[in-house]
Length: 508
Image 1 (tube, rainbow, N blue to C red):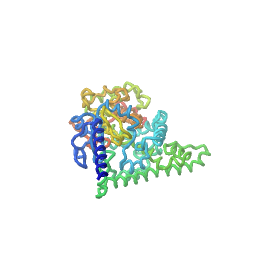
Image 2 (cartoon, rainbow, N blue to C red; image 1 turned 45 degrees about the vertical axis):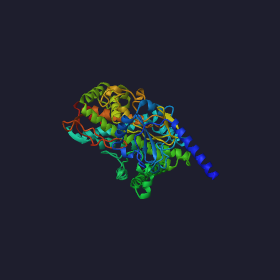
Image 3 (cartoon, helix red, strand yellow; image 1 turned 180 degrees about the vertical axis):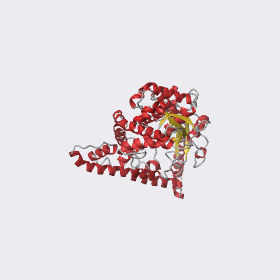
Image 4 (cartoon, rainbow, N blue to C red; image 1 turned 90 degrees about the vertical axis):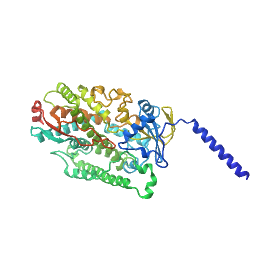
C-alpha cells in the first residue's frame, strides 16, 4: 500500500511539474484540431491560399498539426528573418518523408540531405561546377546557342505571317535543352542536331510522372494509412524514381564509354567538349568511395530541377503578364532596341543595360513564385520565432506567396508593376521578396534561372517578334495546385516576326 501511495505521489508531482512547465511556454495560435487528423480537414487547394487565409485569421506565425506532424507556418518578413538569421542552422534540415527517401536517393541529394558534412560537400560541388560565376560564364555559350535555335525555329514556323502557338511546351524544350547540353552535350528537342533516341527515353521517363501537391503527402502525416493499404502515392514515387534513375544512369554510362574511347583520340590531339557528367566522373575517379553513381545522379538532378520546369513556368507567366499589360511589353521592347546593338541578338553581356527587363522577371516571380511554399525546413532543436516557442522536430513552411501579396508590405500587391523591382536581384528587398528561398538552404540555381529566363529567352522573344493575345479578352491567370504553381491553361499566343529584325533572321 505504501508503494502505491509513493507511486501516486511521484506521478502527481510529474503531472504538476509538466503542467507548470507548459504554462511557461508560449506557443503560436492554432485553430481547433480534430483527433488524429489535426488540421488536415482545413486544407483546401491550392494550399498556399488556404494557409494565407488561416494566417489572416490567426496571425502570421501559425501552429498547425498535420496528422502526427507539428507544422509552423510563417507569413511575415520579420518572422522569416528570424528563421534564416538567428535560427538558420536550427532550421537547416529537411523533414523525413517518403519523397526524400524514394526520390532523393535516401536523403543524399543537396536538396534533401541533412545539414552537415555531406551536404556542405554537395553544396560546394554544385556551387563551383554548376552555379559559380565562372561556370555560368562558360555555359553562356550553350544558352546563346539554344536561344538562337528557338528564334530560328519560331521564325521558320511563322513563314513571316501571324501565327498561333502554344508557348508552354516551347519554353520547356528550351530550358531542357540548355540543361541537357550542360549535363551531357546533347539536345532533346528542335529541328536539327538532336538525339532522338535519348528524347524517347526522356519522354518515357516523364510519362505518368506524379505531381504531388507538396514535398510531403498523406502517408507522411498519417503513417497508419500504410497498414490499411493506402500506398498508391508511394508506389508512384518508386515507379517514377526507377525510370528517372535508369535515364540518369544511362547518361553516366554513355559518358564513361566516351571517356574510354577518348583515350586514343587524345593522343591525336582531338578533344571533346567537357560536360558536367565528365567533371563528376573525374571527381569519382579521385574519390571513388564517396562519389558513387547515386551521388552523381543526385547532383545532375539539381541542374534539371533548378533550370528546367521552374524557368519554363516563369517564362510562361511573364509572357502572360506582358500580354495583359501591353504598355509594359512595349516599354521592354524599347529598352532592348535602345541598348542592344542593332542587328545582333541579345546576349549575356547586354543584361546590365536592361534593368526594366529584370524588373519584369522579378515582378513575375513576386506575383507567381515558382515555389509558393518554400521547400519545408525542419527544426533540429527548440527555438523561438516571433516570441513563440517552437518544438524540436517541427516542420516549418514559409508562405512566400502570402508575403509577396501582403498589402501591408506592397503597394497594390496584386498589380503588375515591373518598375518596383526594376534592375535588382531581389536582395535589396530583404525578406519581402523570397522566390528562391533564403539562408543555407536557399536555391543554389537562382542565378542560373534568372539568366536563362530574363537575359536571353524573354529578351530575345521581345526583341525578335510581335506578340498578341489570341482573343480580345485578357489571358487567364488562374493557377492549379502544384509545387511550382503552373498555369491552369497553357498559354496560347499570336506572334509574327518584327519587320525591323529581317537582317537578323538572315544571319541565324
